[in-house]
Length: 130
Image 1 (tube, rainbow, N blue to C red):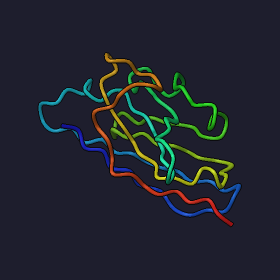
Image 2 (tube, rainbow, N blue to C red):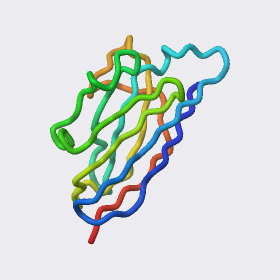
Image 3 (tube, rainbow, N blue to C red):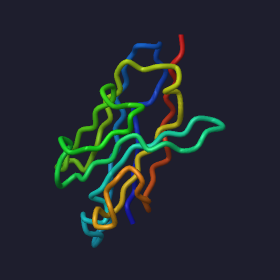
Image 4 (cartoon, rainbow, N blue to C red):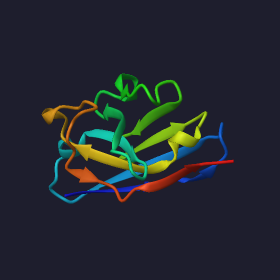
C-alpha cells in the first residue's frame, strides 16, 4: 500500500500563486516502482475530475506531461530523496478553484495523462477568488 498526503492548498486572489506538495509513504516491502508514476488531478463541484500533470519520477520532471489548461502556469517538481512531488501554481484563475488530488501508480502500466492510478491522496482545496 502507498499513502499519499497532500498539503499547501488555500485561498488566493486571481493572479496569485500556490505550491502544493504530495508526500508518498510506502509500507515496508512495497517496491518504489509501485508508485513511480505520480500525477496531480483536480475536481471542481459539478465537474468531472481533470488530470493536470503526470510525471515518471525515475525519468524526472523535465519530461512531465501537462494538460493544456495548466501548461505554462503550473510546474511539477520531484524530490526522490523525500518521496515528494510538488506543484507550483502561478497566474491562478477563478476557474482553477477545485479540490486538488495527488495520485500514484506503477509506470509500467502507462505513465500518461489518461492513466488509471491505484493510490490517491485525500485532496487539498484551492480557492481562487477576489
